[in-house]
Structure formats: C-alpha cells, structure tokens
Length: 394
Image 1: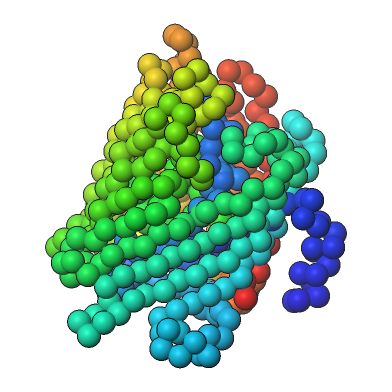
Image 2: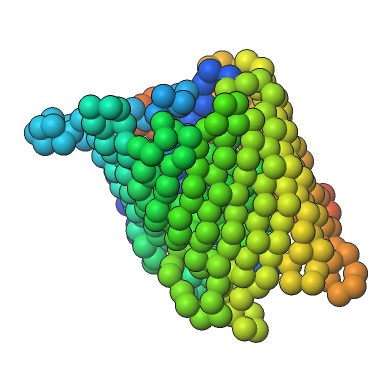
C-alpha cells in the first residue's frame, strides 16, 4: 500500500492535484462513512471540486450520545505519550488524489489534498462539554477549469480550512450548543450525508454558492427534532470584507435515526464574489428534503427554490443508494435538475450521475463517478465527465 502511494505521488507530484475527507451516510443505526467532493461559483463552476474542500464528522453539532457513526478510518497516530490529553483525541494525516476527464475539454484535470484531521472531545465530571474539530489541507489544482474563485488560476496552491471550529455542548445537555469557527452550511441533505471530500455530493455548493464559512451556529436536539442555525461571514474559505458579505442559514428536521427523515432549510445572504459588480451576489433559498433509509437501500431527495439577485432558481435532486456487499461499499445513482432564469429566459440543466465508493480497509478508499448532462445550460453541449479518486489516511 505504501509503495502504491509513493508511486502515485511520483507520477503526480504537488504540481498536479489531490483530495480528502469523510463521507458519512445515515442509516437507522449507522451513518456509513464512505468517501472523499470544493466551493462553487455563483453561475455553477466545479461544484464537485468545491465540495471536497470542507468536511465534518456526522453529528458534529450533536451530543456524542446522539451519534450512530460507522467510520472506516478509526486509525490515527498513537498519542498515548500525551497522557490524559490523549483521551478522546484523534489525529490523522489525510491524503488523496482526484483525476477528472471531460468530453468537451478532452484533457485531464487533477486535484491533490495534503491534510490533517484533529478531533478532540472535552469531558468533565458531568460528561462531555465540547468538541474541537480542525481540518486543514494544502490543496493543489492542476488544469482544473472552472475553479473556485479563491484560487488564482486553474493551476495553483491554496491552504483550505475545511472545518475549523469548536462546538460548546455543556449548556443544556445537547439541546442548545454553540459552534464557533469555520462551519459547514446546515442546509438540506448535507446534514444527513456528509459528502465533504468525496466525489458523491448533494449540490450544496452548487446551489448555495458556498459550502462552509466562518461564523457561529446554534445547534442541538430537542425531543425528536434536531436543528442548526447560524450566521456566517459570506466569504467561504477566506475572510473578506469587500461588499460586507454575510449569510443566515439553517435547517430543522426530524431525528436522523428514524427510517423516514424530513427537513426544512433556509438561506439568505450576500456572498463575496470578486468578479461581480459590487463584489457580492444576493442569494435566497428555501429547501425541503425527505429521505427513506431501509437497510441496504436508501432513497434521498431534496428540492429548493429562491433567487439569485432578481433571477429565479429551482433546484432538485433524487438519489438511490445500494450497499450490495457491506457498509463499506456503495453504489449510487442521482438525477439532478437545475433551472435558472437569465433575464427573462429560463435555462435548465438535467444531469445523471452513477458512481461507487469502496472503503477497502482502514486506510484506503477508492471511488469513481460518471456524470452525464442530458440537457445543459443555454444550449451548451451535453457533455460527460469521468472522475476517479483514491484516498489514504494514517
């Protein structure tokens, strides 16, 4: 395995590209962690690449007792030498590589992520009172087009803060927690299915134009409902002040441990975009999600509608997932629709995705995805894309 990784890094050194992070799937008794997706431009951009820049363990906004998590990466560096500080502490290095071929561009784009993951639960005599999660990645893109706005070009280096926050859980027994730092957007299916760092995603970045941001959220579980609402800076990976960006975002939903799960989400804000007049885009969304989890088969769906400035946007997704062999192997297919109004005409993209994720062992995850645009925006060619990814954690 190590030899394989060394060969991959020799063939595709840091002037090429790499990606990593958790992907956790809800089940009635298990959130199955599957695989490594960056933040998206207002008109679309590479949503899959944008998705891969953020990540958080499932249930990270909930008290630890509420988690039901399957993690194919329980390993990490031995930290016993830290003594009591090592209690409930995990530190891992996380490396992955992604290769993408588009039928129209007819060339490879490569992404690389060299990262670390520090996860610490703080406890006292009365139980857990805080969770610290730090995920940082030196990120290299090579010939990636389009690319997120905070990269200087299609070939560039950036340090990406996927999730950098502290969640204080000691106020009301998990009913009211306060999270401060770089947090993931609590919107739609992303609250049930952590797609960060994976090829599989549920369109959070493409739809909202942002996947994670600096700010504060309030979160918790009350009876059979869970919630998270927050205020963010509106700038994503980097702290920016031009145009005074901000966003309000939140979701309330039924308990994820049930077979049927329903949620209502909202988003309102001005997002920082240096390429648009005034450096901000005004975006509003209302979203509904409904999911059914039944053993080896999952069905998840969401629909949202709203405005980008004065233009109407309608977005929907439905996914069928199947685990024919084990929790570590997933086959999935998605149907997506994205309709946008462009003064005054409408333009629509209809897209299918077929992919798999395979947690080979405690260190390796392999995945692949075929994306086919059946209808593309503004009569662009109905192109197809093949994506491959390998991830290694130790």
